[in-house]
Length: 243
Image 1 (cartoon, rainbow, N blue to C red):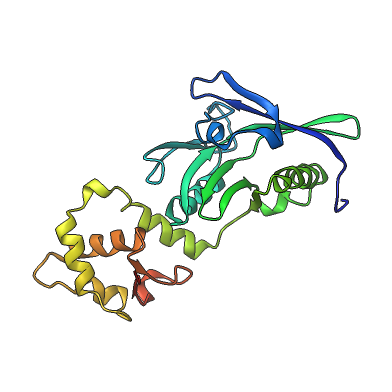
Image 2: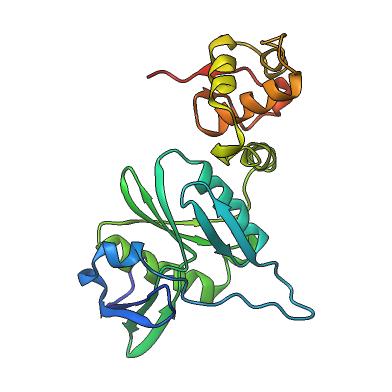
């Protein structure tokens, strides 16, 4: 696979939320606001014998459902929803086409994230498939086109299993309206730097431990308490987030 691919032209096609084509233009001319209002390029399909698991995930970042087409995509959707630097998550944001050696190539990225450092386009693919020539070629020219716009592009494969398990636990506490703010604030005030997760769950003895535990996990989801999520929560040491 060459380091550089001769892309002679690249265009972008964006659907509106109703499914109709809303924008078609050169890739370097698209308005970012149009992408943030995009509907998914493909519709979800379910059929007997389907080899992948697709569905919709309620995203705290979006305050709405975001679709995914595999459990691996769902894993990275969870990661994006937990990432405090991410302010928007758009699934299947556009179809990109490019003219390469006289042939039109097409690709639909999995996610567009708006981050504190700018737009980030994400493709998700199992590691065992990354070495396939057609996959490597598609990701190579996609990277070239996307990065030429000054955006970031990453390919994600299987995440760390411990970190994913931890984020799945935290994600159960992503809905703000399920938590009483006075309890959350009270638990936050009681947790000291270096406390273990278990000690934090018992830090307000006059409250039911299940309420305190839920508040601790809520505080971790929103980033007011932090820990190394690459280690099991049972052995976690907590830190209060600095202003």
